[in-house]
Amino acid sequence: MTRSRDRAAALAVAVVVTLAACGSDAPPTRADFRKQVNAECRATRQVVARMGPAPGATPEAMIRSGRRALVRQRAAIRTIAAIPQPPDERPRVARWLVLVRRALDTVGASLDAQARVDLTAADRANSAGTTLVQRADLEARALGLDDCVTAAAG
Image: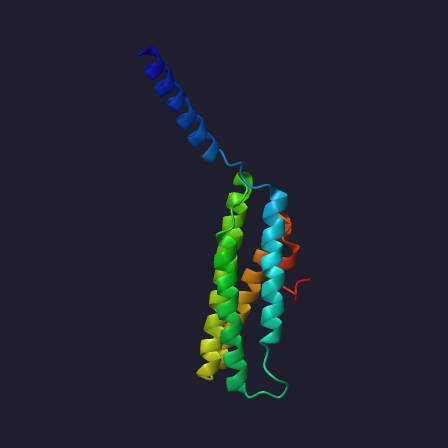
């Protein structure tokens, strides 16, 4: 009986140790997080650059190109949001992601307005988007996400 109890106790300890080891993944480092996010931003920027309309494209072709780019950018934000974040960076990452999503929403609003030939609404959306992008870029720089800063902002 003692051997059975000893085996049962050893098995219980092994299970606890195994479960503890599986659940004790260290949080990602800032460097790892930045590396993954910057890589996604670089890849997205390259893909979006190739989506641009041909020189002399019609306004309709430019809007279609903008919509394709917007789809790719939204996908990139979903990918980035799924990357494990260092715990102490989570609040700032959350703020940055909200700003980027809102900025992308203004791009969509501008494209919709352009398709309706409502240039006043497109201009309003672009103006709001510029402000959001500037704020998002400040957060990105603070996070060390230099490849995620808009090209226009440097």
